[in-house]
Amino acid sequence: MFPAGLRTLVKSHAALQPLYARYRVAKAQRAAQRLTRFLIDARFCPPEQAQAIARDWQSVSEHTQLSQAGILNLETMARYAIDSGIKGAFVECGTWRGGALSFWARAFLRNGGKPQINPLFGFDSFEGMPGVTAEDGTWASEMLHGRPMDALPPEELTGSLKPHAMNAAEEKTCRAIVAASGFPPAHTQIVKGWFQDSLPQWKEKIGPIAVLRLDGDWYESTRTCLENLFDLVVPGGVVIIDDYGYFVGCQKAVNEFLAARGLQPELVTVDVCVRYFIKRAA
Image (cartoon, rainbow, N blue to C red; front, side, top):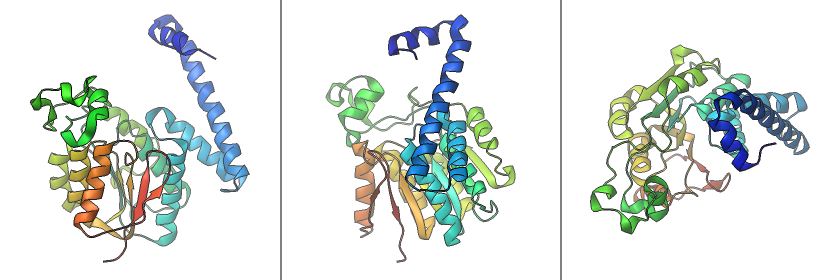
């Protein structure tokens, strides 16, 4: 409907905001219709279930950066946790606006899950991205700083917990999106803070983890999450790494952690970014 340049103009012009809002709604509706048709044609589920999945995706689509493949992976993992009777929390590190967490909650409830058995935990700084390190590579540096890594002063490569605006989100927005899923507040925890600060304090409160979703992007963030939470993942539980195929620092942190533990799980490819594996019994 709108070419890219015109879209930018419309978004910046207050008088045209209602028109742009209608455009966004129409775009999401068309995408939901395509998703419904794909699910039916692929025989993923019956038509009524396909429509329900597409509606849930449409409800959160502006609040997640996951591809539809990533969304369907959450749908599949919700069903897997329920059907396997795995007891433990769904923990997401890097909630951003709460879209992925909210979709999980919707899928979990829609498929008959019991929140008291599989509560929700979401962790995010809600301040944006922390600093990069040399392990994150020049692409991460260019995304965060607009400069290649070799052009940065050493103090910018320490992984400092100094917020950058990239991927900043408001905590209240995340809470509202998750609350709209209908997941009981008594079984929902949204925790603000850098992973390095919050996870050591909260890991004892979380207890067993059924599904751990890591969306921290950088090397240090991913490593911190694995070091604090991996041992809580129950045998048969799932670890989803959102950025494994996208950021070299994330991939390096995962590979190093698994190698140090002597683990060689099958990393299943969901899309160009997302991988997951099932934790086997020791």
